[in-house]
Figure: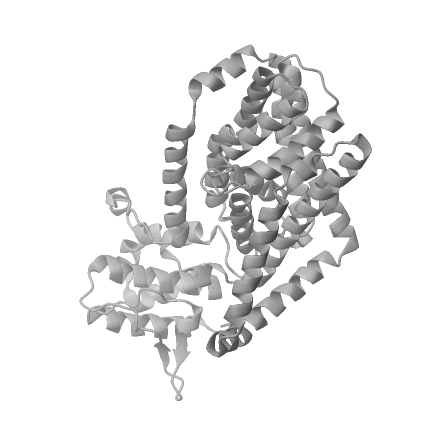
Length: 451
């Protein structure tokens, strides 16, 4: 690719022009499709997924993909001059409305020479070739490409709307907010923002400095709140983090390893806090709260099923041949991330800050309804109850978290009305309010091509 010239661009554009005149469209011209025959003749490969008898719009998109590809490889000016020679000014100026990001395949946008301003410069250079009347009469073209990201986003929105309209109880929330001390309600909100900052530090410290966009990391944590509405607790933020890491330049295995390392750090700090605070406060709630027998039975069933599966030769060979190499690569990447003491320490501190501020937010919520309590003990009870409530496989632990928090704090002496009101206030800040904020953050990330 680094040896291509303007003459090569003319040859490839003429090759595409012949295909276009015969009604063929490629639909996905990328750097991998540029090829040569043994005698050096330029050809475009990979037509198996293309179309025949194509209309003018699809033909224009093919030309745009090739034009943009060469603009990224040899520069805007040489690419435009090659297109003028191969296609003529009339055809070239007609392409201007189609020069949009959605028309450019991702492998082209992944080139090192790709620049966010490239399309703007290319469009400006082409429109400069047309007369003023032609430019003014050109109508914008709306382009859309099917993608899993778009489909998943749409599903998230649908699930979020269903959750909001079926589970939200506005009269209870309004009553709780009306009776709350405004100052302590604001403190609860401030602790919620601190939770985002902590998770941003925890994830960002595990990323390479040259790939870390601090604002992007923070917005990804805010966007995680929107994904939580449509997925079980913990799954939504992990999904957003994985997509963000991929868009930040990490391959799938590396991105999964960093996301997993952030989860390992988070839960390690979470349960370390539970054990340490429990020892110092003297609270003994583990035995009655965790269904030990049920847990042992579930783990036993899982082990038996996996053992039986490994006794089947075809399945065992498939796992050994296909999954083991991936697992080995993933584990090596994970260990590599976790073997960096400085980054790991900062990540742990970020997770500690996140968990502590989330627990203190509930302490502030209790203060908002006039109930004084020990902040450390409150944090302990909150972390334990929240862990149990989040195990419910509903979006964001909806229902399970509220019940667990209310029951746990009533059990330690908080009046039921205060416990319920504080729970609702905390969930407003850490769940319901994060829906619109997360949606806005998701839009920001999409605009900056970070998710």
